[in-house]
Image (cartoon, rainbow, N blue to C red; front, top):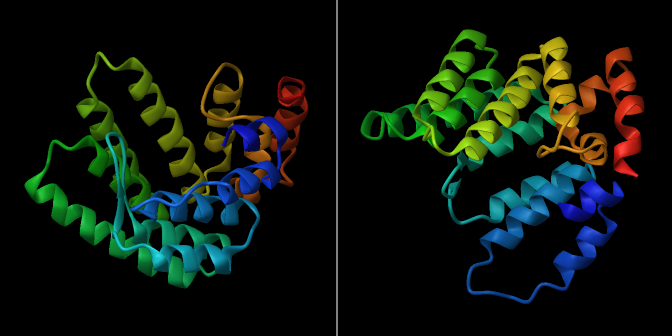
Length: 211
């Protein structure tokens, strides 16, 4: 991701991944390959990487993302909204069930907000986002910033609310954050914005910071 954000290309990232030594757990490498294939718009290959995963979710200290949700995103990028909706709904069902036994897990609320957004349920998506923010430890200001900015940007993009998505993007680019102009250009999440005057203005305004 450093190479992606710095150089605006996946070439060096691919070289780095190909030089990685094998480990007992292939999952992290497969998830990296998935991300790079998405950046390169190799969506069929990205889906193949997801099908190769043995675990049904990505699980770490700040995220819990069902593989079905990632699959839904890829189909969304491919223009297969019908299939995408089915996978978003599958992830919704899984997350809602898990929240019945772990209602205080902010990671589940984070992920559920994205699934709702993918299903076009704006009120539920924003409600789950607010609940996640309530549950994130107040003392962890960095995590709260990441949850707030990263998730809202994704939520608004999936909802097709491009005006608010652009506001979030500009806010993130205006200061150090987990987004760069180069990363913005490569991420297929933002493809629907490419021809909008507001997007072009943001790229022009902040391109100097990426050089």
